[in-house]
Length: 327
Length: 276
Image (cartoon, rainbow over all chains, first blue to last red; front, side, top):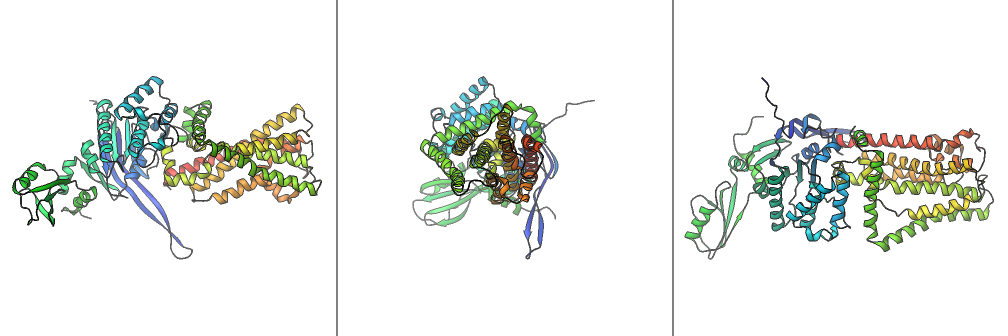
């Protein structure tokens, strides 16, 4: 009896990557330290998924992305992306993926945006019709029509990021890797970018792997989160599940008209009081509406705002939650 | 491995075309700042031209340098400077590979479907060296007027310029690869590349025999101009070496470029396997 074998688009098994660091001890002697940047890492990603890959700085995020994109060879373990071995098949893989590093642009600084796009058509040897169609569609979705003839150096950070994303997509990649795509962007730019990525995934089933520090990116885009810490995956599942497991909280900041004793409403606990301003914590997976309604009903409220938990806090809480694994 | 497969999947002509496309965009980008660009070209021509002036001043005090007359030394100088100018233009940013590693630009290039060396060479392509090339061409043309041209000599001259560019190209690439091992080894590399280039501006007869030996067999810059120019001038080898060496520039060029490609591949492999 044969069944069709299921091949995930990205298949990572027992992946490890160690770095050797040389260190001086004494005047002449040197010692080498082996640092495990990534170890015992396993996961699979199917075509069409949108996955958030998160973790604190130095957790091994970039190292993983570099291995997935063929920049770095794994020390051990098995790794296939789109059926290819990333580092061995680097050039072939490059045609099938798009990579955007949030803080670095690949666009020609002094030339109009259009010139960078035209060169990419040559580099990827995209058919002219396909290129025109993609360019038209992406430029429309990202609202870049009027900026195509503007030199890149005159673009805002948000516009440039949108340009970089178009650049990474013109050759119809199956997978788009985004490293901190919303870093430094204002709220409107972030929103527009997220909307575009959702549309891209819906229209073309492009698989999305993004690293981010912004939990709202994950909330808006990813059905699935992989949390990496100290080089290995500590969580793989939905964002809601992550909040539940970590017991993470959102914060309702209430500005009252007058100073008052700590607010007492069901479903929330007051963490801090500072004059007329109070901070109320409630579970991150619960709706804010009942809490807001209860506060508004019982107090004279001047203003309200909600703070999302920071990724670092969520992960810290993930650890502080017993029982900790032995060893 | 990856690089080899890449070479296969894209023809040599495709590579040249791709290099030209990327380089062309950099030239257009530079043209945005026309005044600055023109100033750079002229300044580069003038500064490198000082070397030629130095030689000319030297000859106001003497008739022969190491047994060579002014027009002969000018031929050596012109040929070497032409080769250096061509190579310097073609290698683009190879010298700054260490900086590319630090800033992550190399990582970015590794995600593009082109051989890495092609991308690095085409990156930041600049015609600033046109100044040097023009200046060298003028000196070479003046010196060439004294050469007793035959069809064979014309052939050797053409091969000399191409091989010279290739030898310096190979040298630059090879020594830049040191930066895969240690950061900021540029000064050390320059001692061999630009240092070697400076020595070839003079007849090798003014140096101890060991210099001629190392420039022939270790860092083969003697093949950039010394040996082929002896042929153009119809001279016997002053060190008594066999005459066929004078025709060996293309061999040296192929060997040097081969060494460069191997070193480059080892460097990239080291980078992708150590991440530093």
